[in-house]
Length: 107
Length: 120
Image (cartoon, rainbow over all chains, first blue to last red; front, side, top):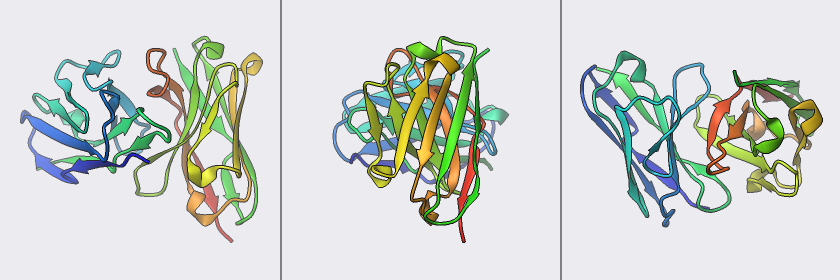
């Protein structure tokens, strides 16, 4: 099973700041990595698939990069609605796996 | 508008069974892979099972193999998760989700989730 490790576990930031989240895979997933956002009490929302492709309707402030084992999600300028938990997910090998999540909280 | 609505959750004793249902609307259900993902209380996301549009392929996480069965009825726009031999560690909110057409194994629309509690 491919283990995805997200860091840091929690980030405390202010609106308007730039944030970079990390996801590291235990083995190469090529470019088959996605990012999701989950707000409290809500279902996850797909942000990025295949490392750098924004999903339909996702604002341009969200961008993804990386390949192999190291990936990043960048939010260029935090909006109030961006404070949430972010998960990465790989589709390179079965079973599909998610990272443990990074919580972005208001400072 | 795409909608996914789960039902069938609740409290069940260890060793018991439940069948979750998810009714879809707003898209051509028979063209999409569907999935179940769960989230234990206060924890992260765990993929559970996927099913191909024609049911010819099904995949499961190891922890549920032999106990859970995913199925679908394209005529009813529905996907199901039959859960047998339930354990305390199966307690979670279960989400059904649609796979995006481009990749099949990323999920763009999700239901609101249904709680399954396994306890005596």
